Image 1 (cartoon, protein in one colour):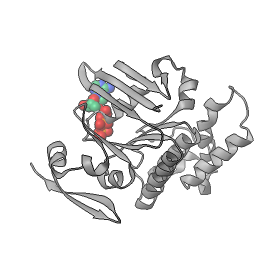
Image 2 (cartoon, protein in one colour; image 1 turned 135 degrees about the vertical axis):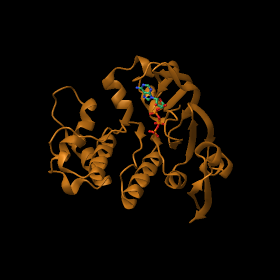
Image 3 (cartoon, helix red, strand yellow; image 1 turned 180 degrees about the vertical axis):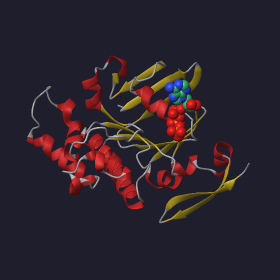
Image 4 (spheres, protein in one colour; image 1 turned 90 degrees about the horizontal axis):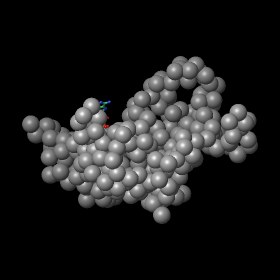
Amino acid sequence: MSLLSVKNLSASLGGKPVLKDLSFTVAPGEFVGLIGPNGAGKSTLLRTVLGFTPHRGAVSIDGRDAASMGAREQARHVAYLPQERDIAWPVPVEMIVSLGRHAHRPAFAAAGRADKEIVEAAMRRMEVDAFRNRPATELSGGEKARVLIARALAQDAPLLLADEPAAGLDPSHQIVLMKTFSTLAGEGHGIVASMHDLSLAARWCSRLILLDKGVILADGPPRDVLTAERLRAVYSVETFLGEAGGKPIVLPLDLTR
Ligand SMILES: Nc1ncnc2c1ncn2[C@@H]1O[C@H](COP(=O)(O)OP(=O)(O)OP(=O)(O)O)[C@@H](O)[C@H]1O
């Protein structure tokens, strides 16, 4: 059974069609990179899957109709990392990460031992445990991003939708992130992450979906999706396509326009 199934999904914003008849599924074990130019519809796709945007078509999450799920039930089945990285409350990092466990226990119930272990593991994975007691508002942009990723990991949902999770991370934490997502996929989770760094996506994702103007232009293994011709057409860039350690490298060189 797929963790995410999207059938003939269309959505409009401000009277303009933004997603046009999209269909795809995500199976356990897949780490899908959602790529495409600014304004292609990547964030809207993730938000629409979660029911935040009016749409036509069918979405099922973990085999259930997404539209019929309540908020708590949805949070147990799908974790979402939004593009915005603002943390408004000056509360300790550990408390922010713990919020990921809320949907797993009755309202107002205290965190149990299992909850604490999952929070601890999520903090260690994103290397934020060293500053667990610091107010989250006082962290750097990349540190805040890692705290919010840790919160999404603490949700421990079968499906993870992440909107530009690598944005603002330094190279080592980009790799920490991608390795973590690969490991989670290996454990049977399904992951969809929007990304602009094509090399990072090509090296770590098991599959790429290329979105342009609300349409899926290509969907498959990174090597098949990332052709020089397609990158020229979609991004208007000439690209160096190479390989290192058996994995693709994609380096935009110059504009074609
Ligand atoms: N609230 C809104 N009202 C009207 N149009 C919107 C709204 N939100 C987004 N759009 C438009 O929808 C289109 C898709 O936006 P979306 O944020 O999904 O793109 P994206 O692929 O995530 O882009 P980026 O890579 O820049 O984050 C864009 O043309 C954008 O201007």
